[in-house]
Image (cartoon, rainbow, N blue to C red; front, top):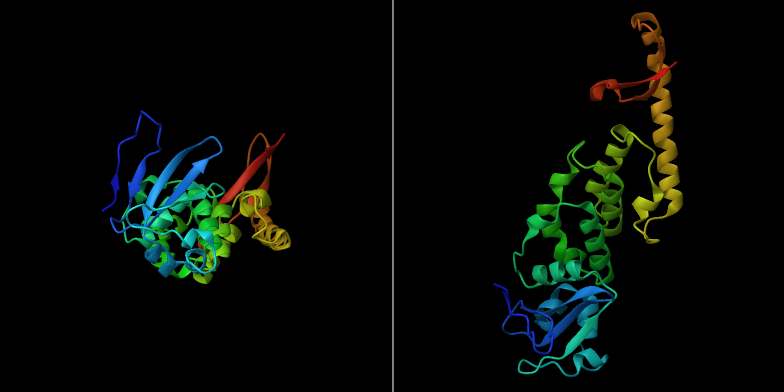
Length: 246
């Protein structure tokens, strides 16, 4: 189990979280107006799960791998990375459970996907994603489907990617937002997102045109007229959204 050392109020040393007592390197996270977190890690555990860490901690290639020590582990700053995501990644690579219930926002998963992609840890984190990510793929359970699209695309999850795109086609009640789906990166092609939105609009228009004659024949509305704004496919449970036109 990981342990946390108390805050040193005399020299303001950031909290040290020990992921293993066989640690030989400290990852320093945060900065830039973020709280600083220090993780005592095993370079062996990190290298097993990440080709990037494996190269980083080779003593013949980079400075980070030259002073590894169990008695006086060096600090390696990672100021560019999301601290919570790196902490979660290190917990997974050290087989530590962590507190996964705190991640209820899809933005956390998107940030984590960026870190996993950067450090080439897809295979090492795949079981974790399969265990903790599937519940937010249920239809109509997630308002930020574009973020899920980002995660599945970046991490190359074909089945989950298919499920998310199906949600966007059948249950999404607004235009697909490219800015949300790209998550301030260029990892998801803009052209793909525009094509996806175009297909979503075409599907909605086809169903609306097919069902509009039925409404003309069978629906009587008093005091105002209505236009069809959104229709879900009948075999999925037909849901009609009507907008009044006065």
